[in-house]
Length: 263
View (cartoon, rainbow, N blue to C red):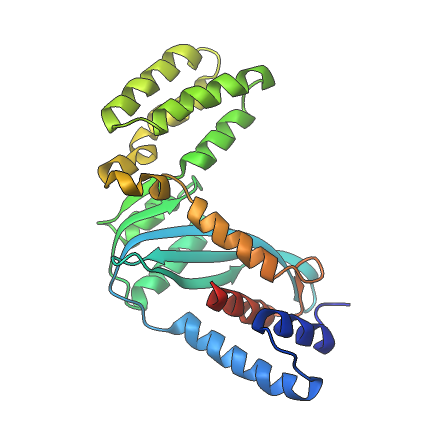
């Protein structure tokens, strides 16, 4: 089958909304959900967000003439100045790229979001430049968790534990100055063996350590995309339907909208 049947869709909606729906009412209900999802995706946004997390997930979608293809869902999650978490939007595109993210950021701007203090993302090439082009006043925090994962994947198994501990002293330091000192120790200990790994942390030290410029109570939330990754895990649970296969684009948006409303 290409995607989700009417019967299966009814089961999904029942699960998400906590009610049982007959096949007779499903068509009207899904039309209402689609309309609400469209309004959600195009609604005006607040002028200011303190922090914005950008990340994505992969889903299988049925495309006419292509069959089942894997595409990327871009997700933007904002933290308002009052601390409220808000899903700013989600977009389905063929692949994840800096160009795709620049289009997403441009749409956020057009929908009214004018000021962001800090963007938190992974290290996708070209993404920081895309952020600067649309939001030149915003700062960028590179996710330390992604940085550590990549670093450990590049070294010998016997070195991973010690390197992880040394890197933890960098992003777990009590101040930026202490973190830079710990980074010098990483450079001295590992630079000759793993110049590429150490070079990443030295070259991007400003982005990795950006969170030190904010109140200490926020450091655990700003130094990584973990908050966004938890949200994406919830989205994945809500969209685990036939191995993430969806009959068409609108089905993706409906389910993502419903799951976002549950958060």
